[in-house]
Amino acid sequence: MKTIRIKVTDARDIRSVLQALDRGQLSPDITREARRLLPSLAEPRAAPQKPSIASVEHHEDVRGRQDAALRAETARVRERCVQRALRFGWVGELCGRPLPRNPDEAQMCHLDGGSGKRRQQQSVRNCLMEHHECHQGPLGFDKKPLAWLPDVKRWAARHDYLVPERFRKLEALRGAEEVR
Ligand SMILES: [Zn+2]
Image 1 (cartoon, helix red, strand yellow):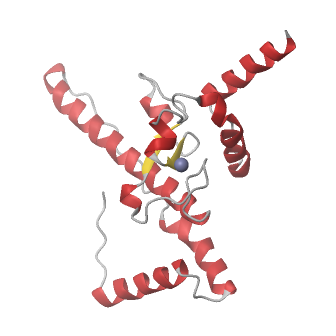
Image 2 (cartoon, protein in one colour):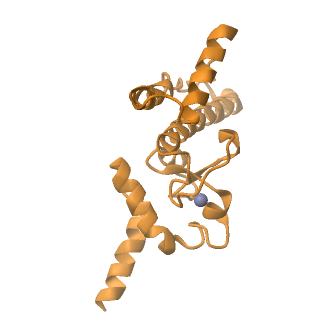
């Protein structure tokens, strides 16, 4: 994570603007402008450096750096998901219910899961902010994906994303069953 130093007074100004925005105290013009600017605050920084594989002896070291790159990547994706959810009122991106006030307490969930493809799945097109319950609860989309298909499709359409593979497959299966 990159650290940026800002003056305390500037930090207070930024915070008071965000709080006013949050409370809906600003004029519609300023609110619109702030919403337009907010995503650019979360623009991804330069891509993490690929580890150079010097020798087998350095394997563990390389692994460590790969993990760090993956963590950095996750943090960037998460930040962009948080900003996207904030633009739409900070509600669960599928269920529409309010998310915890503190963004750190909200969960970033992957729609397509599984192992071996972590990199491809770390994408704003596959990740969203949701409640733990909506993700992994007994009625959550991990256990009952078909029940969430309309919400996933609505979310993908809203952001002009492709419906993640797992849900596309489900829909194809369901279509085949209806034809029979
Ligand atoms: Zn939810």
